[in-house]
Image (cartoon, rainbow, N blue to C red; front, top):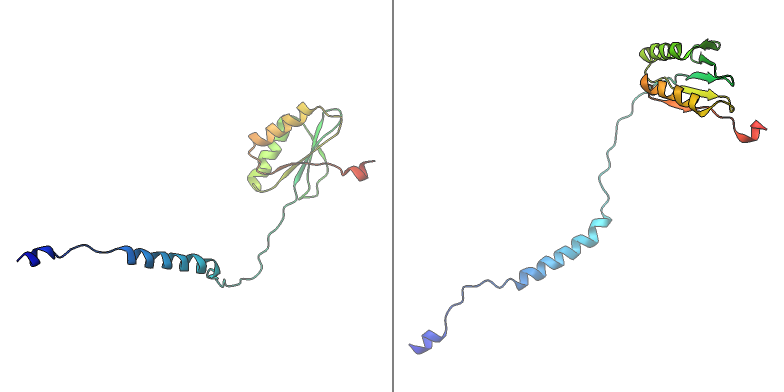
Length: 141
């Protein structure tokens, strides 16, 4: 009986071989993952769409501080306006076409404050695209 008592069954799982297998699989996936190209989607083609580009409105600030506006989309001439009239014109044009840009062309001798007033007015009128018009230096001389 003493021989039986010395040999007891052990009910444990040896996990060392499983860890070795997992490490080998991890290395294989790490090496092969960068080589796999992601799936490509073959998109259907459609006819070319017409993206009509709307010419911007030009707000001119003259050297004496007076304002004029020209709608380049309708090829209209410069129309002298006051600051209040400018807001009404811009609001009307933005209701017609909210994507139409507004370009501010100011004389180089105009005070910065006047340009900021016009830009503030554009912001209050919720103009999405506002730009400043400048002349390249090479042609300016």
